[in-house]
Image (cartoon, rainbow, N blue to C red):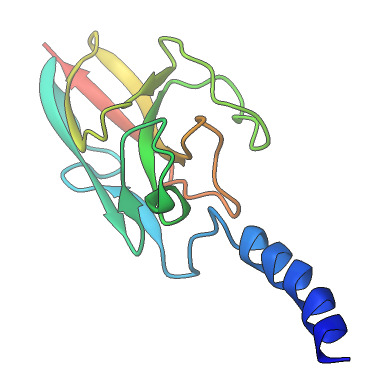
Length: 142
């Protein structure tokens, strides 16, 4: 009889573990370390990405770390809202940081631009719940 109980319990435990994979805690967040909404920057500017309560790993990571970490995607003037249930597209509006980078040099033309960070899993899908920063608007000057 004990074997039967263990046999029933084991699949439930596997399901429970998978249900929490790629699920950041309620205090996890991504943010810009050195930019705020309304900032004015130069045409070549080093932007730093911050993360709290979750880790950073390269895209494609397949070991256990993939359940507690992801990699950054920078949304630049992203049209509309990204789909949260499929891989993020590669484009001029969605820059992937596959190696686990936490900073980049922005070379944007002069004018107003929107920026937002979105963390993706090993296959570039947003996490559940998504780790996405506030969308900020910056101005680039010559």
